[in-house]
Length: 445
Image (cartoon, rainbow, N blue to C red; front, side, top):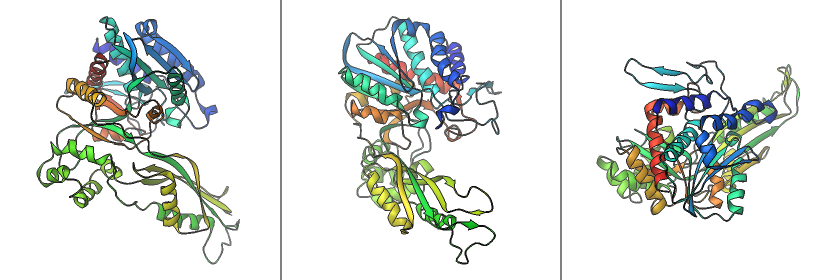
């Protein structure tokens, strides 16, 4: 593999502004139409050898025929990205700038560098490299690339329907997810490769307050308006939910126990005995560690009056909720109602789903991930955990419970902070090591 060519192909993909929006009429339709064409131009060997289907959604489903059809491997990524306002960016978000520091560190900047065109390009580079070497997988390999993941679209569901309809036996699925990180877990200083064996449920909840409207010049003497009633509900719903140890915590602790120092190492080895200690440690750790042990609720949108001088008759808030593994959507909605404790606040589920099944953190599929990691990141320990965000992978649990969420890039806290924010970027060395992971994984297919 030519490293420089691999980097240039990633940059070319970032330059196509495939920004997903809730209102599809606001999308750049030409960019979405151009992206598959760019893939074909950049990777002609893949498009000559693999079978490609364009799915509604939009989605791209490649099939790499193996020597046998059973126990197929499915690798996933998405090629749509979230919006990026140029204000505040060090480099243009779709310029795909390549910078080099005085120390020689190369970095590619742009929306999608990590989430998720980096993974998509990494998969394709590994496949292309193996094709050039004449490699034929033992079992079929499918590449499922969705173009509407960021808006929870239907491309992934359509891919599942196609694969399921053909009766394909699936060994396991790998989608985006955790990364190789450092300092995320209390008591562990070495790098950890956090691999999602499940993901939290996701829901959008609407809080709705209704009060008489009128002119803002003479508000009610009580001070109670739709907005003040809603504000009180927002304060209550924004309080942390109780911390729990979900079922995914126990294999996570078992993996961490081999690397943890001091008393926390003892606690990781005996999580039931030291449950209060672990809950306090995770709650006081990083934001990500805290989110592992509870359902999170965040108000993301507010709506009120149509003008500055109007008392709104209706005020609404959108709550983004991520449901801890082991709980349910119904249980968490009921908790919201109890916490608000105001019958005049209507609570409505706009959309939502329960957490999915938990993939095994042992056995052949898990070991294949660990073996590939030993090639690309031998210094990291594989740690199973519950994915905090929602991925297209949740739809693939219909095919097999062995759905894993892992992006094989070593990422710093600053790089993680760039996801869905300004200055998303990836170090070239981290990207190239990710390609080695995908190649090692495919060689076991």
